[in-house]
Length: 452
Ligand SMILES: NC(=O)c1ccc[n+]([C@@H]2O[C@H](COP(=O)([O-])OP(=O)(O)OC[C@H]3O[C@@H](n4cnc5c(N)ncnc54)[C@H](O)[C@@H]3O)[C@@H](O)[C@H]2O)c1
Image (cartoon, rainbow, N blue to C red):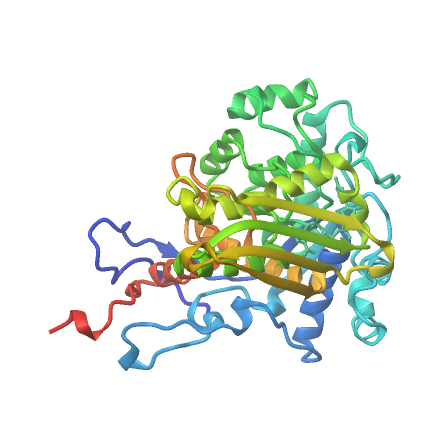
């Protein structure tokens, strides 16, 4: 850490981009989280606990994973955090927005994810995080009502208010840079329209408060204009449209999304590639979930559920490519349900029933019952995205960062290509991009058989 590195210096292929400089991660990094609910508070508390040495940041690649470099014979496998010039946990400072005024400690207690001893140990730090007033148009999240909200003449003014907040936070925290991750509720399903096609159209839409522009889009627009890298943890449209990409490129800001890949979809994108790799058929995949947190309550609204459903359904189709394998996947029936069931709180249960068939068409079944904790799985993703997007910005990367697909249910991509959902392809892409960033050889997994 602290040293400036050369990108791609040793990359072997002529077509790989030329080296650039990665700026060192000097000073504090403000992590800005719209939505101070279960995921955001679990992330913050986890970082505070980890830096006091009370608990380990399990699930975070940036903190725990190693990366192989060079040939297997070289025995080089440093920790990612020692390999990449990432901001350290002790350099992070958090800020948030929410339509409820409770501080991060009170919100974490309501969310009921972490136990009292953990929350008590970092109570002082959590209590200092008080959310700023939200930009909240209730028509996009129908199940929530809160009074801690901004008012303004139009959506353009709301963007300016968030921009002013960002500058204020940077000043107040004496932070050198910021990065933002959407941890707010899932908004209703919105299809991109005319207003989303160009920066000019979007700016005009803001002036007339176009109904296609949701609250999360307003935050994202403000972040990009302030040069703040942004990741979208929910299935909302938010930055997944041409105008946002154009703006991000113009302001040299990396963006990524969407919808954290945590429980059921994580399993789906592990199992489906395995079945496909062995050319086993699938006739049906029924996925259902029960969860009882505020996220579950919001998803009980059909509009918000539709956004989540679209996000959850896409992965299988893409991994299995039924058009190429009609005999294996042409008749696949895929259904996803989410049921709001308050007694469970954040402890979600996700069931999958998979009807498969093998040699000569004989049927078999797989059952998965994942008793998970939603926010415990999401928190390390928020941390990794914040650190990796900050790195991407310092490396001069801009626009959609496909190498971060690993973290998302519905990875955003360039318009000309389809998203990669297979977790192992995503993992390879993630690590090869890290190698490329640091000028290390990309790993192709060609064995000794291929060399003299
Ligand atoms: N936990 C997971 O495993 C997981 C996985 C994928 C996606 N997500 C998504 O992450 C998001 C956060 O999940 P959570 O469990 O923390 O939900 P949560 O309901 O506990 O927290 C969301 C918070 O966002 C606030 N909010 C809503 N609209 C806002 C706005 N316009 N501005 C500011 N604040 C706003 C709500 O008041 C709430 O406090 C959800 O969209 C969820 O779908 C979570």
